[in-house]
Length: 175
Image 1: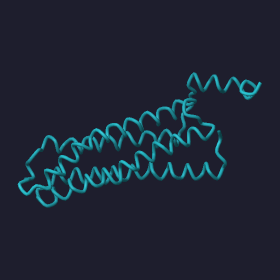
Image 2 (image 1 turned 180 degrees about the vertical axis):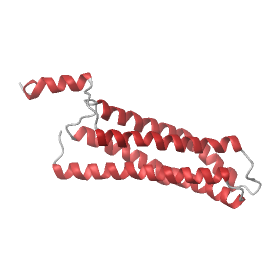
Image 3 (image 1 turned 90 degrees about the vertical axis):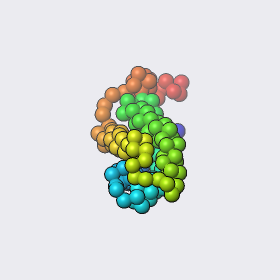
Image 4 (image 1 turned 60 degrees about the vertical axis):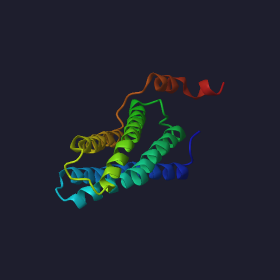
């Protein structure tokens, strides 16, 4: 089913907004993670980890899920299709990867926030665990830039399914 032009533009706007919003939120999260790891000021460290938990749960998770859902709507409601082009399939797989890694990191983020909330926390505590959010946020930011490039350049290449659909033509669908 192909969407009307107005609905397609609305869905595209929602997808771009949630995707770009995810990039910005992850960049902000990365800044907090670096501040939490590098700062010598205990209040800054504590505030960073508490803010990271809120940012992850209330900004990044909803935006990543919105990006995934709106991307699916876009692919299923337009001629691009979900399985016709490699670049669309790559975007889907990268979005799923980012979502899974994020959901797996939420426990660690929550644990670090809980520790930061304790009055006995020091800036030297859990240094190895505190490196993980920096690495994952930096890696996530790099991975999130790939779908942006794919969306802009739309590299050629049909999947075997897309090739079949293209060569079947409209008469194969309606005998």
